Length: 186
Image (cartoon, rainbow, N blue to C red; front, side):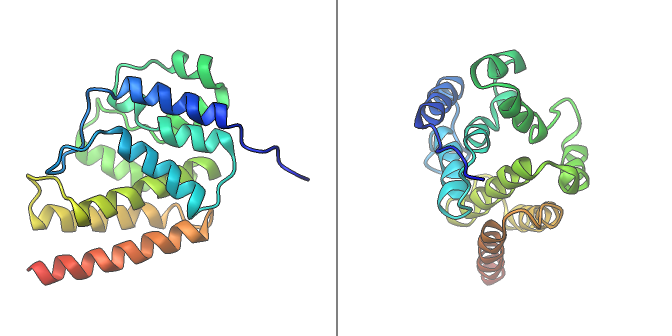
């Protein structure tokens, strides 16, 4: 069975939508990078390392933080991108009304139960975050906090395994390199 080619119009629409929704947001690194860079990186990892060619997964990767971090409503995503994309975005969205520790534990607990597309988005997101924490960490993060993030991300990824071995291998390499660098800083 052959797959339809990825429609670049869907991807460009997702980029435009996300850029508008996240327009005033910045990452927590020293440079205060535009938030959209993270969303582009997650979809880039899916495409180039994970070889994901499902436009719904790629669009959802670009949109993965819109419900969690902006005033975007589910209906907006469904109207623009359909139920499948919305479903993936909802699967990877944390409930910000819960305490942070509980949200982090729920990510670990729910990881094995996610759909294949959501697992790949979450895996690419964790890869992007590890890379950023290694190379341009949030300015107010201590060595201990960076170390804790790495260990927590690994616990989440353990539940995501089995969907994309290339992304899993990339995560493992980032984790190993990051832990080595953190241990050298001690």
